[in-house]
Length: 312
Image (cartoon, rainbow, N blue to C red; front, side, top):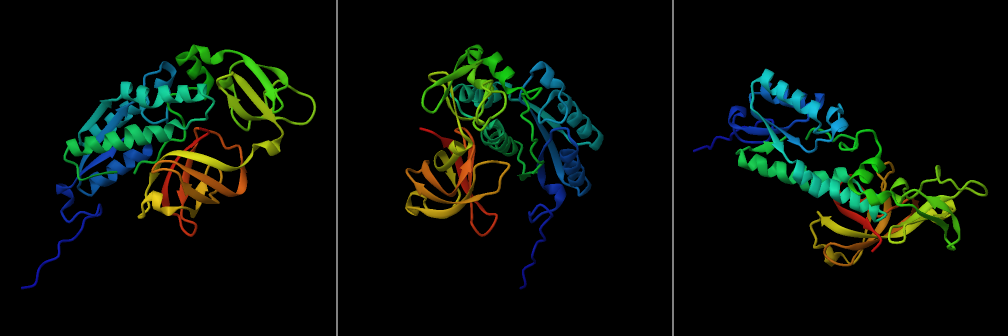
């Protein structure tokens, strides 16, 4: 007797759309609203979820950043108009502990953190997936990330960090690579590796921030060529390849160490299951602790994992 083959729906499940529950992560913006509308039109059992991650006065009224106050109301209105349930999950304390506090502490330690990745790792992907399971959802639906740091209302990282960690604005010395004092700064949180303008030490050849020494409250500057780096250390690696990471010994991959630049060819050498050294074939400028390093296949867009750049 010939067996019937059940057709797959557009979400890849062998059942009718009405029997497929899809959790839609909604920010209130156009992208996630369109996703929800398309799924509703196809007959899916749609459930909308919005994470309330912060409540920082001016940030609450910031339109277009993920999980802001105005956007939560927009998401609720869209759900009401389309007739599907919508839940707002209060993750403010979790967001502060997992993302904002680490963001501030990383800056105080002289790093250049990427809080949006931490939010995806520790809050959005992990906790939304658990929520989807709790709601018996079959899958979640891929709204593109905001390019803004949502809890920084006016683009002023230093102002947010100073509010959370008042000691961050303590002054210190600006020195060159020989230890010569060139001037005074108003807190290392106001500086990033690669910065040239606003150093207040004019005259002579251009100087760039090449390192932040948080322990001694020093901003170290040097010529542009001092920014070039070939060897970096990576921690907290999440390896997605088929092989055991430690079994690699070394492997040629491409890595992206700056979000605005294309991947560069490199050699990855595992140190432990979660740490590695990365040797860039061609030096890259402006690499700083706290930034992400993503591993790519040399011949395709496949991602093999990634980790965080560290100097320890």
